[in-house]
Length: 166
Image 1: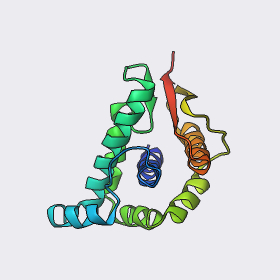
Image 2: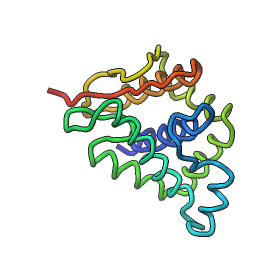
Image 3: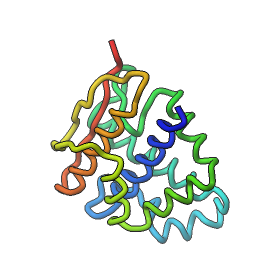
Image 4: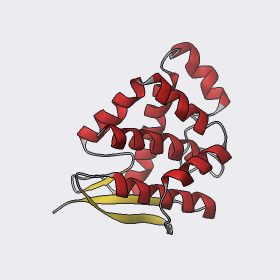
């Protein structure tokens, strides 16, 4: 579960950072220099967590608009509670958080890291089903990473999602 939780947190940071770049997918700017200047005095020790929570909420809102909200569908930014809690808990690991910050220092760094986490995928504009949510998210997360990577390269918005297993 720790490996999946770290993967969820890392993908959220990478996709969140890239989703704020031009052309932006959502209107937040949690990773901009001005946001850092604003957040650092208030969240001196927990700025990366504040950025993570802020961009997750912004991205979730947009994904929900395209996919919908319900007990039967999930996406990277809205997962079952056990995954949400696990992903948030790994941010207590300062070494892990510092590694994440390095990966999102530039667009090229973020794209390169996303490529390392991804399996090849062809993104389409709009919602895109990845499969069923089951006990092992590893393959689904790699597939989502590949779709996001392809979408960022193409300049389109894709919204990969999972269905609740029947």
